[in-house]
Image (cartoon, rainbow, N blue to C red; front, top):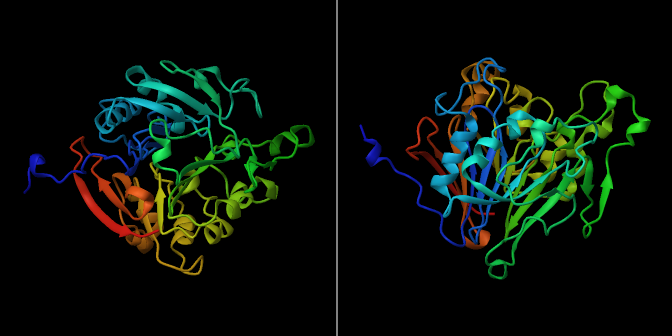
Length: 363
């Protein structure tokens, strides 16, 4: 049996390469980006309270809080232990509850969130969820812009790199210039039961590096619950303007409503990544849609950050078609975006051992 010292690990990031680390803590979402010039970005730092979801277990273990594990992952991954950007997709603890532990040890240059400066839409946000320490600057993420998250060191070297902001608080990019539209009706026209949920207000963006495209959107909503108004389907609003992507991070952990048929037809991803951590992630119906050959033409591979045993039992044989059911999922994109690979890395310890390799894929 190979020792830890003999384990194969991922080569360090090198300039021109784009690395995207979907970090597994068992308690929420966290994704670390190392952009082609070394600019760093963390999207979410989740820490769902211990015990709130039966069957959700911490990774690697419970000896540290999720934010502490995330901070350690960042420190051993980045060329230098600081973050240029943090994006908080929305104010739920499984997306931002660990940020304080991260910023205790890692300085953040800029935080982008959906609420700054008033934090009162669609209702006031708990002050404890929007307290940022060791942060240089906080501002509102603005839908439609492509100049908020930019390369900080050598932007002129990588002109084919772009992060396009798609949604914030129901406002969404139209695909023309920086023009946006409102998806949500005015709050005064709504019954209280139809107020936009926190998930519907999620931030989303499309990252483009040459021919490579990547989509992520927090807990953005898809198919509305029975009897709910159709405007609550945020995926439908942005499906066409996102366009085809190579890698699709499944909204809302794959929990019941996302990956709507129109969204899948528009995006046609080669790779789906499910940031799952609870036994309810993904819903059997969502995985069925992701794998459905009639959803869109072409092959597709599905990777789950954590696919719990109760989830596998509920899903049945279809669960065996998931390429990986545990571990950090790392997308490594070649210089210029001409090819990419997927590496699944152990989350049971900090060895960095590669459990499986997939690709190369060609955009």
